[in-house]
Length: 268
Image (tube, rainbow, N blue to C red):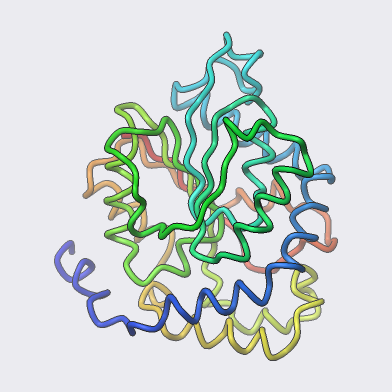
């Protein structure tokens, strides 16, 4: 398999990242409101619970609670790639961990720092800056956890990104990737049941649809493809959970999307 899957991404259009940046720049204000409301909802506790269980199972936490004081004071160093408006910064930074957010879109970083300030998080331990998730500028083995949500589907070169994320993790560190096959459900963007996107203009929905069709990753069978690539790269205990989203997004409320979010948890 390997060679064909690695070569499939060589012909991606050079302007894809610029179009992705433009799309998320336009969405930044509304996205901030949505993520702030999600932090204040019952879903935040579900996210904390799921993350805690996975990190305990992987051996990086002693307790299923992600709070530092529940885990023998163990403070994790976390990299949040495609951090958006700071959702994981609040969840993990607010629980006492050191977390650094990176996003390609400047306006998202402005909003992430606004979110960090809103929740009065320690700026020495919780930060966000502009950066490329495919080429994160950090030293080898810098992080206990690399976490990302709804990022991988936007990447022109996901194989190289996964290789970089492996490089950044300490031995025994954990990759946590939450994503979905959004392109294969592209018609869902204008589906009345897609409540999370109901306030987005049709023009923006069309831009998102165009991005789907530019990216090779949109054609792959995921998360099976991801699982195979991660194993090839050297990750162990690569676990896929296709029912993850159903445990988080139980209610048909303003956060609901018909596309099913999956989780991938892999240990270096």
